[in-house]
Length: 454
Image (cartoon, rainbow, N blue to C red; front, side, top):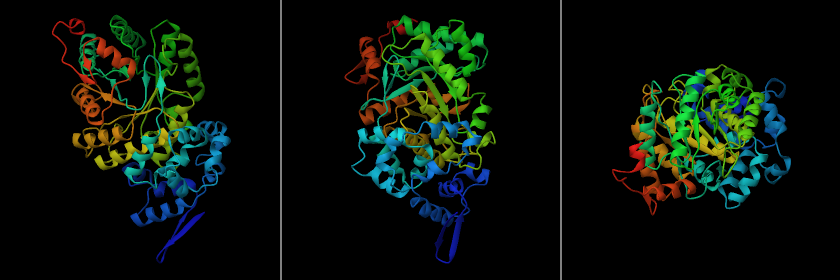
């Protein structure tokens, strides 16, 4: 039991899960789940108490019981006590001060990551302003590689997302060419298929692989189908680069996605057996989102942001190339408006980076949310300054298959110019060889460029 008093009022929090939930910034999903603070005063009281909780307490009292949840078991079984030792004596509040101090540089935070649990990083994020989340995340580069190298300082990648409502090959190919002309695609050329049919997925894999090989593009391709479909296609000899799966922060929520840690283990081994990477072996691609555990009734009374951080611990087990929070995609039931989406995106990126995950973000919203493209411009810019590894490049920022609003090919030009960032080094060299980039600036292609004739 945790207690504190503000004036004449006494506040009590029976366990860590309740305390973390009450300390969270206001959001519609936690209110829907019945775990949110009832007032700003209670939220402040919870943060006061949380600041004094020792970090060790999160190892002693799992928010989801060890015996009930394989994600909890993985978190605690994989914990590195030696890496944790430098901060083992700190409280959550003291940990915040350490993270913001000059003592926590990139090397220190990298060494610390295996010793941190998702509950620890979620807890400290709840005591932070937006600028704190940005400042700390910017210190912590996370580098991953497959056919090009992502996450290096001074670099910023974009996923080229050429979705189509009927998976029309000509339309998808046209979108791919369009995106490449804007310098998108170094993170991945990744298609959300309109159907999970293995035959259709195989066709899309063949299409993207043919384009990549024909123009010798140093990137990776992916069709974002269920992991079991991808394993089957690997067995049939399909040209699979990355293995995709949506994941969540509890065993029950992952079961709702049709996955388990054992299945992800199998997928990783299947992908590694192909040996398709050239500069690295990071080949898993995970997507997450606050609210996924609640929508599956699998949150165990834990707030949605802490559940989200637990999903990054799942991702960390598989040394992924890409992890992105699809921050506003699940809808206003979980993140009501632009303000909540912005805060959630900064939290997710901060927590993922501290855990050592190569974080990207689909800066997005659905059309029934109280948000607009100006909110997305704000979050895109803030995450860019925070060192986010990659964003989405969607034609016109409007995904006509998934029916939501994201970021565009043009946003790659904007953010790279604004922040002085360049594409992944191998991809930048290819753009220069193609005559599409010079001195870090994209150039208009000549009318007879081979890509335009494709």
